[in-house]
Image (tube, rainbow, N blue to C red):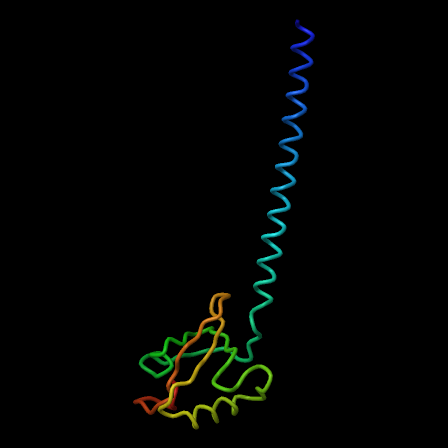
Amino acid sequence: LQNDHKALMKQVEEALHQLHAREKEKHARDEAEALAEARSQTHSLPQAFAKVNAVTPGSPASVSGLQVDDEIVEFGSVNVNNFQNLQNIATVVQHSEGRPLSVTVIRGGKKVHVGLTPKRWAGKGLLG
């Protein structure tokens, strides 16, 4: 009777070890998949061509929600593929005075769309 009990307990112990080993492997595999997915999402963000370093309070840029450190991905028709210098953006702004522009930025690792309307205001320029 004692031997049967010992044998049975040994089987239970081995089964528990196997169960926990499988769970540990599954947990490690799930973590690796989650990490790979997070990396692929950050790689799937479009490439920025400019970064906002200042936004004047009360300006059209400020009113639209543009923020310092936003990374510009698209500014109207300008994107990473056709951007050469900041004059490209100035040209788009001048031709869009009073009309809304679609601006796409990366903010905090996420893609954000901002509607920006260049217009004359009390400060300098059409954006601020």
